[in-house]
Amino acid sequence: MSHHAELRRVIEEGEIATGLAAQRFLPRFARKLARYRELCETTRNPLARRYYAWQVERYGRLAADAEQDIARARDIRSARHGGLLPRR
Image 1 (tube, rainbow, N blue to C red):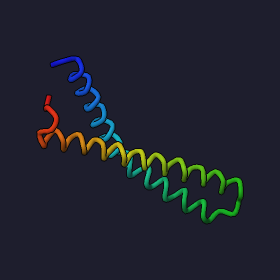
Image 2 (image 1 turned 120 degrees about the vertical axis):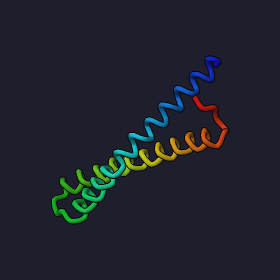
Image 3 (image 1 turned 30 degrees about the vertical axis):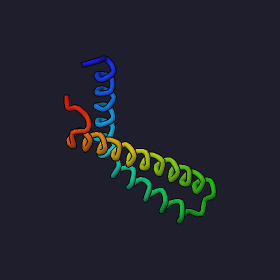
Image 4 (image 1 turned 90 degrees about the horizontal axis):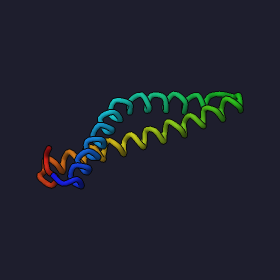
């Protein structure tokens, strides 16, 4: 196996591992996002509302990144099983 192919395989394995980890954390991010969104809408304290809005933005970004990582890992795995990429 060439150096380039080995490097690509290692990167793909890392992408798959990242996707699997993201799958584990996505439900937590979704729960926290919903909770902070609810707090942001119901609180009267402007300072707390700003903090909750920041948390909504933060967990929204984390959830979007996790979904993107999961999709990337699925693409790599389906390409491997479809015969487009070499298996180990």
